[in-house]
Length: 216
Image 1 (cartoon, one colour):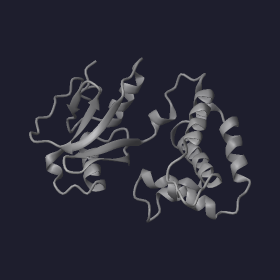
Image 2: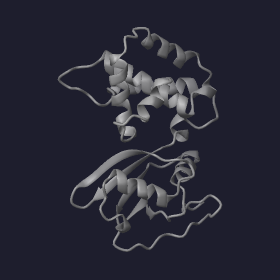
Image 3: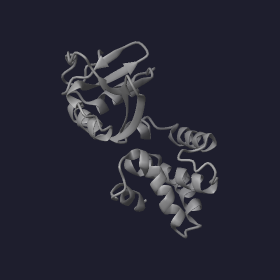
Image 4: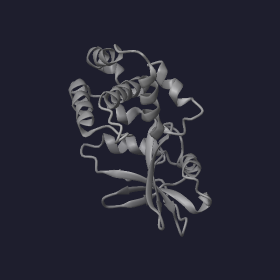
């Protein structure tokens, strides 16, 4: 687990999308045949309260990296987990957290999936490191840097659901919006999209205390 933070601070690390491939490469270079068994022991024996936050994220990442190593096929050189490995992780998470009332690991980790939508090039998604109290304005700055947007002043962050498209005000908190949606009894699918806007008429936050522009 001490190795994971080292991967995220290396010079070649450019974002959360690069973490799993980098971790897989590092573990493949280590002569640690016992590591796979140790990871599985930790996944089963650790108290569920320890499986959220940074530690839980690194543990599941290590499991995913070992799965890639064990099932590596040179002609594929896969950068993503197989469906079997994903299903195993999902089943493990449901089983180990069934008795907890706390939100899931994904709800607490400081990552936000954002898609860049451009008319001429379609959509490109990246996983960004976003702290809980980072504002939409700060997230837009991160997006402009990560997506190499030359005119960030003409772009804004939107919350997209099946029924609505809301432009988020600069002083709102995307991570708090995400947490609020996840806390609903039947949350609808949603996406954060960074895109060009012809008219920057921002929505007014409906709930200043919660710091977002979602209606109650």
